[in-house]
Length: 79
Image (cartoon, rainbow, N blue to C red; front, side, top):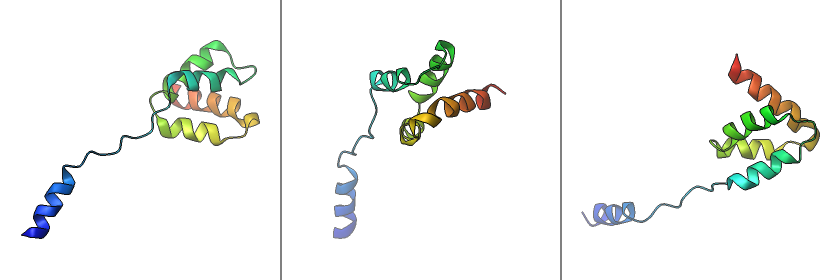
């Protein structure tokens, strides 16, 4: 019984909040991409602010792949 009580106390400890990137940081990363049309930037921004994992994947790409990847992401969800 003592073990289950200790477990119950642990379940009341506050959970660590997941990392959330500030929207200004996402916008700044998108603005660094040359030749990205405003409409494509807005579509990508709308997706990246909703998914931290998607933004992390975007940031791991080399700069020369980011524009094409965002365009593919936009196409994939518009089909």
